[in-house]
Image 1 (cartoon, rainbow, N blue to C red):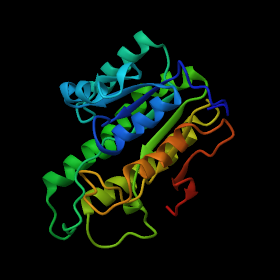
Image 2: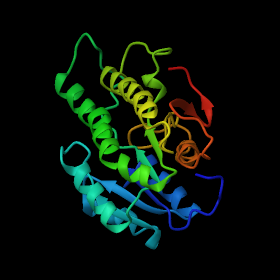
Image 3: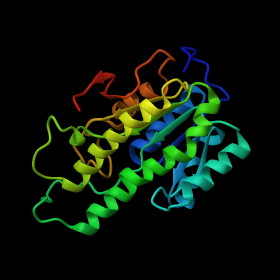
Image 4: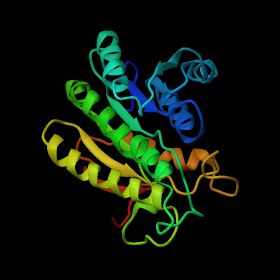
Length: 235
């Protein structure tokens, strides 16, 4: 955040944080000293996940697809902490590699956009004032190289188009928040062995490390970029 490795007392929120790469991101941030809130659609599952880590990780009810959930969660964080240092927009659904755009499943496509784009957008809007209040806010949109126009091909139409749109949102938010101390970046964690990624991917800790890198950038770090493992990706 400021180049200072002491993150004690600083607060991070990870959406979709009760499993997979979100949970590992929460673990790594807690290990650095952050108080971490894991947003979970199912609060009971969030609580069960948080208990694995002790007092540094807590659950917060946050279904990003529910229109008012982000506002309610932001009000809760504001009451308790008054600011937020890190927001990781991790919640995502519907990786559909076998689907084809010419045979669209509109239900899947709408659901993907509702969570992957509109959910992330709502959360960003709700928490932007708290990120600004911290003076060193970091907003990380967990994206995918599947959303890169440079390498996009057939398959995964719901997932790829939603992640490409999330990347566009990253650029716009970074420009609008420039000068506020808030850095906004998209991160591709790579193909990670999670419930969504399936077996055979890289260890989840490796994928999460790139997210944590973006979440702990120094104040002179990049904004409005697309990265994997700290290296630039083509849009």
